[in-house]
Image: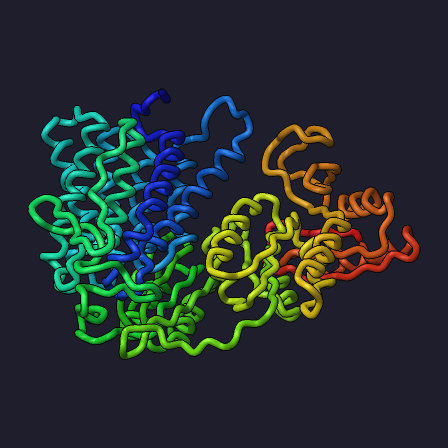
Amino acid sequence: MPQLPDDLNAVAVRTWCSLALEALGRERAEIDAINVYPIADGDTGTNLYLTVESAAAAVEAVFAAHETGATAPATADAVRAMAHGALIGARGNSGTILAQLLRGMAGVLVDGGDAAHLSLALARAADAARRAVAHPVEGTVLTVATAAAESAAEVEASADGSADLCAVVHAAHTGALAALAKTPEQLAVLGRAGVVDAGGRGLVAVLGALVETVTGQAPARSPRTGPGKTPAPVDGGSVVGLPVGGTPVEGDVTLGPAGAGPPDCPEDGGTGPAFEVIYLLEAGDEQVARLRTRLDALGDSLVVVGGDGLWHVHVHVDDAGAAVEAGVEAGRPYRIRITHFATESGHDLRVQAEPAQRAVVVVVPGDGLAGLCTEAGATTVIARPGEPPASGELVDAIRRAHAREVVLLPNDAALHHTAAAAAEQARSEGVRVALVPTRAAVQGIAALAVHEPDRGFDEDVVAMTAAAGATRYAELAVAERQSWTMAGICQAGDILGLIDGDVAVIGADVPATARTVLDRMLAAGGELVTLVLGEDVPDALADALEEHVREGHLAVDTVVYRGGHQRAPLLIGVE
């Protein structure tokens, strides 16, 4: 049996994220089914799952980057990664609030993970989440978070500072569960539908995972409900399961009691705004304060979370363009997602065009390549430095492509598992998906160049796979610290030339290192060199490298692309 943690150290944070993801995976469909507030769009469980998936992936990245392997990363690194991962991967209203809860906790847990720190972290989290929501409503996840914090604080206070971690996490979970059971009494839309708050139920699952992390035992789950069953009462009669009177309908809307239409939005009695707008935003505090005011006037369900220059913005509006324009005025918005909810009937009446026969979905490291691939007809997902896309983002891209057949190019070995999960999800929705295991953006460019949608699917996939496999790839990177590599010992600030993923060259500057890398790659032959320049790399470097190839390697052509804001200053491909 694994040793139980005395405090929330880095390993415990990693375990918590993993168990929370498992718990939300089990309960995702049930939580989706009771999602009636603020919009009855049946996706709260899925949004929470994808948010925690991003948080867990960020924590795993910290452990993967830890060099010694003998000891765990610092707790501060793990909790900051958890909060940042949740922020960049937050989905929907509920996921955005959960991201702020985790961010609030992280601000305290970086200083310690004992019972006292955890109690304070829960209080800071609940307060931060309320401040992030433009118009807090009781009977929601905010109420559940506050109850969890208050219950934990009571245990900590009664023990005069000597409470153990187990007692605090149990109290938080018990308080949250009791508050969840009362949400139908606090929010009329929940009472009419006969359900508890979906976001609150998701938070209870996350806190239950924390209990299991600390104690080694998962708390008892509430009884499930099934077709035709009334949801099981908990703590005096409040319900926690599916809508009373039947199973949820398929599609974008979850119905309330049998025979009823979708619940009205509780604040205005109508169907609410038509669009959900979400984006990440790089902006300062003053700009964000003005943005809040403007978005609050445009719509409702406004939640803005984050800080330190990076924010996650969520709002429901009728004018999606105005919401995005407000972000542009405030700073630099990206990862923009606009979802059309509903019409007067509460159902999504979007007129879908006939699906295309085939499409390509490609992950790219910068805006420049995104534009190039879009011009070639591909649907793109941008993987910004330190922000790899989660499987849900790839599934969204496959859906946006709106095709019967999709070729998926992850362009990163670290994304293959994520891409495989997205492909499996899309297949379950009836889309034929082929995953070409590209390991670099230049391989994706090569594959896209030979794509022919008019030939047979299998034939097209084989041709794209062959083109990618025939492309050797390299990138230049800046060493962050002294370390051992396959090319010797590098010092912080050295320029590293990685060929096919391994460090092959250690240099003092970008031009000289790039020339050495090119010579080594072309020594094995090649007909075409592809150079992808980072945002701050001058055109003169591309000109110099092109001249170097022309002088030293006859009959080798060179093409140059601007990659925009990408992790590596230079990407190289040789075909």
